[in-house]
Image 1 (cartoon, helix red, strand yellow):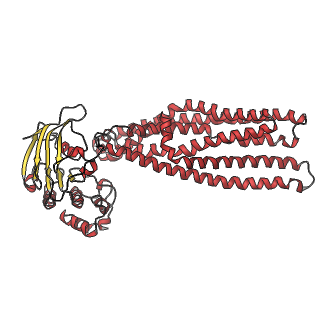
Image 2 (cartoon, helix red, strand yellow):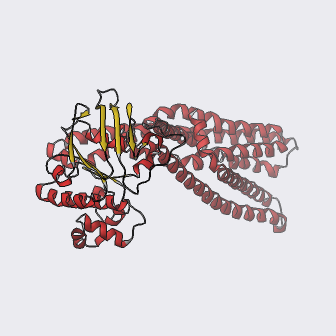
Image 3 (cartoon, helix red, strand yellow):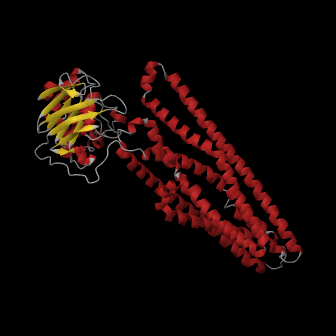
Length: 550
């Protein structure tokens, strides 16, 4: 089942894989021709007195040698080009599959685990075409062609080569597969666990050092490394045994070919010059089957990696998109928000929101206060269609958001959250997420309104200054101002403020609140917070408690 699905995933690259397999077959054929003509020329040279008598054989040697080198280059180039295109396709497919799962489903997975699936597991599939599909197809074609070729001299010779190709290309790989399957699955899982733990360690290093737990975490990493090392040693042992058995089978095949050919020469049914040609032809043909035991290992790793990708891609999204989405309401004059009977609970827990009702008129400012865990941020997530409510309805501009596409609904909101995510890039690239086509004048205005212009003036490269991962080269207040500027650039009719000053000191908070006041002009505003936020935003304040507003 998993193998069939993986083949369907790579099916669009079928033409490239077929071309690569054909080129690989042609390369192997040139190698067989080179070995056969070289053996014939050497044998014939011992019996002739004139160079002219072996000139054609030597010309064949040169032709096959040049063809083999040229075909090998084109085959490798084609194979890797197909592999890289396949890799790009798988990455695009996987991102498109998991994008609807954010954030409700993806939050169940550690960031390092997601990174391992997106990078390591996808890159594992890179070897599928180059080391599995193409070698297998070329080996089958070569086995048939070479066996028929030897059978023309004597049927027994063809049977010997066919049996040897079957043993090396089928029996040995199947044995290697049985031995490698547990280790291949363990390798993929251990590598993913190690990557997830390494990411956690890197991101949480300050906390580990502060709590004195770096030793325990290093011990965990060491244990995961040992598990990965054991799996890789097992795979190396399987590879070594498969290579040894393959070499033994090749040697036995050469002996068998000679045992069949010698009586043919003795009885006069075969020219003695061909006695060296036949085993060397068989040797060149067996080159096609030699990679197959290793191909099985790559296949098992690919199947294990594909299983991890399919596991996440098949997860049902938390929000069901309508089959025929309705258009979102016009935002020209502001949008009213209406919430009726909203109920929601995380997983199997108690309801966080239980029959919540809320009305926010177009252009009105409403502040929602309440204790931590009351469900304030949950309400924001439901407004943005990150989760599906268990009951109730949310209408924006008179239209039920459940009838609209999630991306269209989110386009109506600009959000400034307490934990703003900034990407590892420049100030400019982070701002342009709000509006990719924003002009320099629009960027400058947004930064001025957000109070970020003074900060940008002091940066070494202005808007093009690198701000580091999560914007850590900026202060907390500067990050929030950048988030405000980004929300301004989006120019959405509804501004949502989710405790935007929660982690700021009093002085920084005052500056950010001043920027928020200006950003709120002319918009419907839904703010979540307490302290100085209600007074700064204005409008009315309601309290969320026990899943309802009071």
